[in-house]
Length: 209
Image 1 (tube, rainbow, N blue to C red):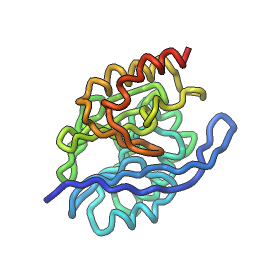
Image 2: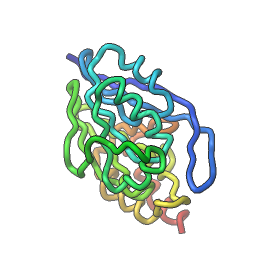
Image 3: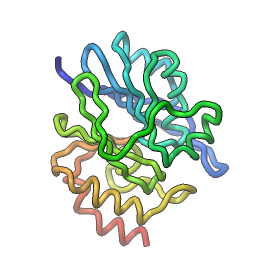
Image 4: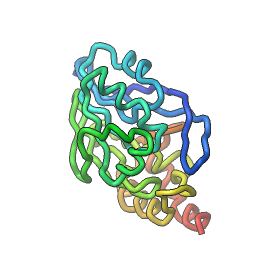
């Protein structure tokens, strides 16, 4: 059974530090005809469930706990029975959105989440958020970067729980060491590759100071 990656864009609001912004989020569904994993259940549990269809949803993996990436996770889990995974360092952020419902399981650096032929290796990449993770599948030559790395640069670090030098270290040490042809599928916006972003590291460092 062929493993495939499906893409859904959902729209809603991101709120932090007293501000609110309209956002479009990338939701990624990885698996085969029988089972799947959702990466970042954003905004619309019904639309995500419809995209999953009659496949067994085994996991909802949160790349980090900003509300726009997790707001639909509990409803999707209740509907499908899927396990919600989050890195423990992002629990304080999670509780801002879901104070009465904790994730079901904790992501740990180096572990692998498997379903539908996908093997998603967890890379802890703090900086945008303390518990931010990326998910790398060597067989698919793809890394799902959440808001850690975008086309054109790192994720934002101007708000609470974020730190620019840390995100640069995460990108340099955990992502730019991946093969240059690795496709980068992001939490917002367009895809890129590791090779396309690697030459800009020094520029990002200079711009951040």
